[in-house]
Image (tube, rainbow, N blue to C red; front, side, top):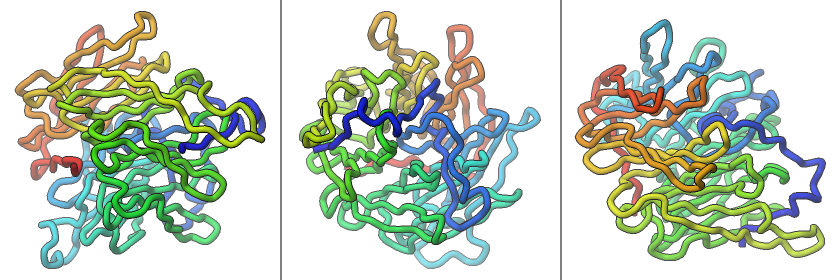
Length: 410
């Protein structure tokens, strides 16, 4: 079961959730003691999803993390241009059987430290787990683990402001590293044993009106969707979607509406796009009762043949979700929920024939409209911004090598 507390009986743990921005805007810290890393998280909304490769700079302009030939680059918008800097790469000859120029073997995912500087995580050669963080005008780094990582990680915020990282481990287990600031070390735990996880996980802090425990969602055995919830010192689980339901890593977002607080998206059968959501009123009614599982509702957002990548999700200014996926023929499609209808609308961000190979992430512009970042098969880098009722696509750079396309293991 996915166990939960009674929300209205926890007034001291109430989390105020205002206007949420984008799933990339999580606060996080690096992997060694430093003044910024030991601070508590800044106040504000706390929620998560599949970590994004896009985070905002202090002025709101985008900063993007790109992996090509094993090198992790950072490119950011400044003074009308896009500078680029290689962060993680070999300075000596790479070891045998490694990638050509760098040691990253998954995409890099980013969170924000309490001071607003980025901290990134990625899988390295040999199943290692790496953390790079920006501090005092330079990048510092640490290898969290030398082996055992078998997927792109996801990072979220602990209640103390430190990061907690989840990934697929050996034999399709689900594992967790969390940073302990007082010790300057990482703890390691097993969320679920062998045969439990078959794609990169998604994670979030627990819903509003609770106490900040992590929730993790992953494609389970036989294309099921499993949720894991940390309760009283141990991990509990719930089957959210049954066998034959899930064909990608999920994305998760916490909505400000307590009646529909948790929303999950994933590729379903025949390349459809599916949404599962749970409501606050499905939780148990009293602390003295045994906690009850969440009850999920489901709907098909887009029909067969319209979703070919793990979704990227953000929230519109009214708190309703907006979802982006790779569509047919290299297109990028957007599905957004309209509260006034109610129902799902759709739009084409990049048209068929664009040869889009990867979505980095999405940020909201100052007016609340989305801005989507992507790569094409030839290594060109694009952003698409929504303005005055239409999408505008602009090429902003070309990488030294085509950006790798990551396919979720099935």
